[in-house]
Length: 158
Image (tube, rainbow, N blue to C red; front, side, top):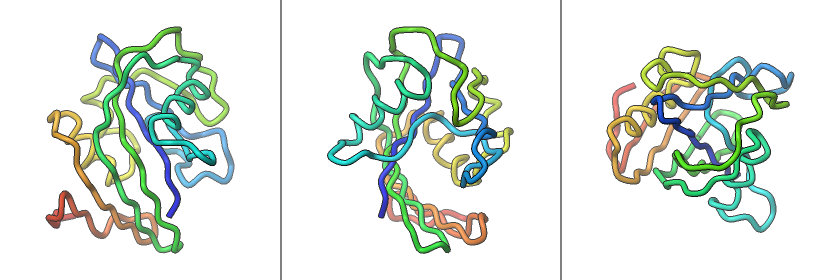
């Protein structure tokens, strides 16, 4: 299982800094809107990875952030992934909107689920909006379609 981080940076206007993944040709997230983050480097912890990825993708240095949960992705390519989910609203610097992985844009939080996002992302975005305590979420995809979701041991209808 691979490990990655994903985070949603929220500004004072109630917007998330979202990345529209349109710049890389071979990208599992091609044309989707996601938060910022990425895969662990050797020896990194989840918080170290998140800080590094935010800096690399946005130019922002996080002052603080909040752990929100672990999402386990299962899919038909045989490679699963543990994704550590964070939110942040405190950083230094101004975002560099020119990222080599996609176009960065501030999007009102309530509009994010209406963008082209993964179906499973809508589940954890709702949990973030509800300020849910840290959670364990398993999302299983077949042919890029969500077929199963389990939240803290309970099956959700998909």
